[in-house]
Image (cartoon, rainbow over all chains, first blue to last red; front, side, top):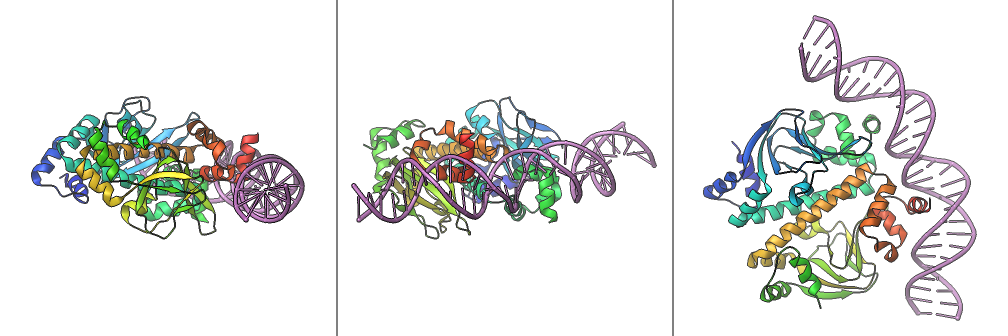
Length: 188
Length: 188
DNA sequence: GGCTATAAAGGACATATATCACGTATTTGG
DNA sequence: CCAAATACGTGATATATGTCCTTTATAGCC
């Protein structure tokens, strides 16, 4: 059952069964294994993924080889390299599975086609992107204004489940601090 | 002439004269003076502003009274407290003029009405928001991965004009460092 | 079941950045 | 044009965080 997607869309706009069928016909489904790489730096990005289950991360590896996590995605979340996907440029991010994942994915072409064919979906994507922007702006504010501890507590309240599922080193990478610093924050 | 707005829209979608008239009819215009406050923390936010000229900042004042700048806006840019505007919640940010400003503004109601009446504008706002999200994600990456100097140089290349127009203390606030630290970065 | 890779904690030290203080230039507003 | 406010740089510290290293625990794999 991929009703998770329908549920998310209907939080923004109601759909008839026929409309939802049309939506679904623009997606394909694919499963991935833990540790599997989905998007590789330098390659073109054809799909955006909607997670039915599992956990992924999107990250950037800097020239010194250090990984910085831009985003986690769990059930109901979307993930891709947005710049590469929307602008058709080579990926600067990579996306990997932290657990076995069950996903739906949509190409940019199908996404645009769906928006043209079903206005409700253009509305949905507009609203969803706006909500994403607002949330990312909040994270930006935490990054420029808060101490590492603030950011940790912010993440803790926003995604409490995450801490049981991913190693602390990845949490640290998301917060923009080292593993050791995070370890001292949580202990003290 | 407020053709700046038309030019921005037409970078994404072409408009007929009649369509542009319809767009403009949903906006009003207003001028502000330097130092004038546009959005105050705690109050409701009715408008999003499009700058025809001038310079504004959107910032957050934390409990200790320190200001952190989320966004600058110059000609062709849009500015508001997005969360407060879209969710109709009290503002957590404030917006102020750093120079005399000439603006067009649109209420949320008119924005939604315009999207319903003119599909091209729903398309425009969807694309614009996506582009904003991509850019903010890039800034986020700089914040978690880069040193203060990296962020400074990034801002310098992205908005070279800014440095002649705003005091260094505000640049520092945008970068998430103190005035003194920025001063040492640029000197050394 | 045992081996290996990964995860986590913490000590010792290095570095980046913040804080506080001061002097001087520059801008602003009447 | 003058007085006051603001902007800018810089020194002396304090603090937060990074880096490197060792130890122990845990999880995954053949």
